[in-house]
Length: 454
Image 1 (cartoon, rainbow, N blue to C red):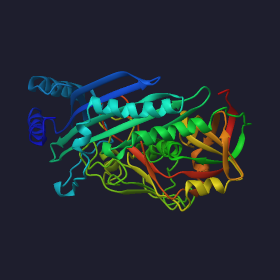
Image 2: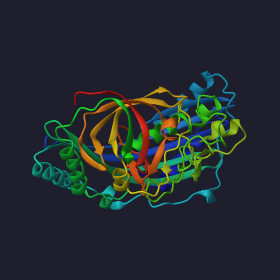
Image 3: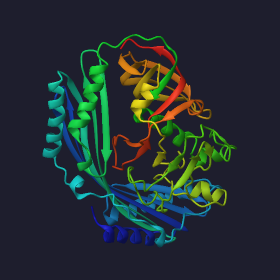
Image 4: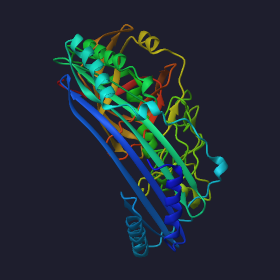
């Protein structure tokens, strides 16, 4: 970490290095560490620290972008020159109007950096894994997963006066518990590591594996299905990418194109992109330095808004909604802080009210078939249960599904009374925590198209 003063000093220096009409500088410094375990022992412990500076220059409507992982002035100058060369070789981008401006008074400062999380050591991660392994051994299981924590420093500025800086951190844990023929899964993410009870998380995964032992065959077909938040988050993730995306919306490729103001899903569903939700991964600005704000995406079933960055917003003489991803970004702007409002029933009551149905923990290998219609396919995984006469009676073998997300969200019978954070796996590359806050939902006639042998 180089600190706010030094980061902004670099931004100011880079802006002076070029005669471009406009210039944007994005600095990301991060450090992260991970402890991975399998078969009840730790088999990997790694840590990483890196820096990245990306420069975007604009000459008229020609744009060039170049990056380096060195903060040395000589390397930065070379990067600026590369960006300039790339810009001169580009065709005119007729959709481009300008980089954004942002009044400094618009920025908020949520508490997103917790020193305890940043200082969480390899020994502490090993102790957390030890608690998980104890639960596995107590239940005669093998466990697999990881515990990781990281901190990122992000500074973004441009020649129009934008100066945004923040430091954030997070911890993420995922756990698989396995018996001879069944598995159970649980995961959690948080800004503050003290919010995660690793033993409780492991016990939750172990209980799923126990109940799923000796899973039964079940015929494919349409079933009343209850989806836990992990599974529900997949529906919203695909909608974020393909429906709420301002670029796809303008190109007519979004399901919501020509549908804003119309009811598209069940009236009990409200989705807000809330970058300051206390239960989510708050963050104050996007990767163009534009301050984030709440954006209602769906209000009581009615489509209200899509997300915009400066490119899509200025094209239609609108204001950026603060959803730019890091340049170069061929995807378009997407919401990273979606929150679905909860309903009124507990998960237990949803189960009790089901005569025959299926309870799904999460999905695996989910892919889009038709991005415009929002048709997806995938499989259940790590905890698929049969519900009979209001009770979970055991596990069933995993099922493949093919469904239209919009149609699914129009067949909702109930939403649970609590929404929880489903953290996205940090994966590889620079650390930036994102997640979706969702309840469990109960749906009629969910289409399971085939069964598996496990």
